[in-house]
Length: 213
Image 1: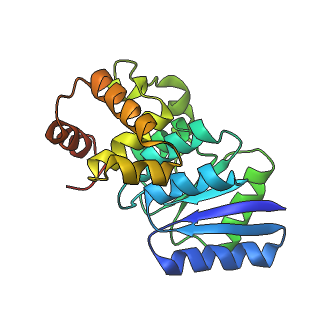
Image 2: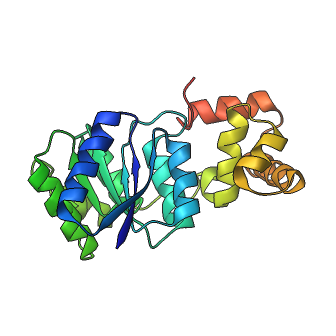
């Protein structure tokens, strides 16, 4: 049985994907979430076989959620279901570890086909998307100088929560760690990013598109 987490801020989309998977059989929906941070936490908790992920999610952009998920749960295969058909979005999603990129509005048969391909360990792109995205994927390298690359998955999660104004105590509860550990992660990320204050942290998160202003 393949376990699945559905991450989309529109209930009608989650309901549609659920119907397709239930019709196929062999899938169990273990969680439905409506924002990026909740998607990361659900994957951390359930370690599902599949994650259906929208890119335009509140609290945490889908691409950043995808990077965190692939680090924390490398065996989880991610299927992006997005309205964005721009090649840069496709390339970034594939580079970040997505196995499939499907456009919203696709026929249910195409979504079912994408799921079958991903379960079999193969990539899948919606028909309108350029195959050049996969070629470009192999030629572009990530920015090694990006300070975000120096953060651990836990530090990234703390960064997002701290930018949202979550207190250390609440952060510890959400992440199932001690307040002292949460504060240590916060201090480490502040040092790595060269930030001095909470205001600096929030500005950094907004500038990088990690949270909504």
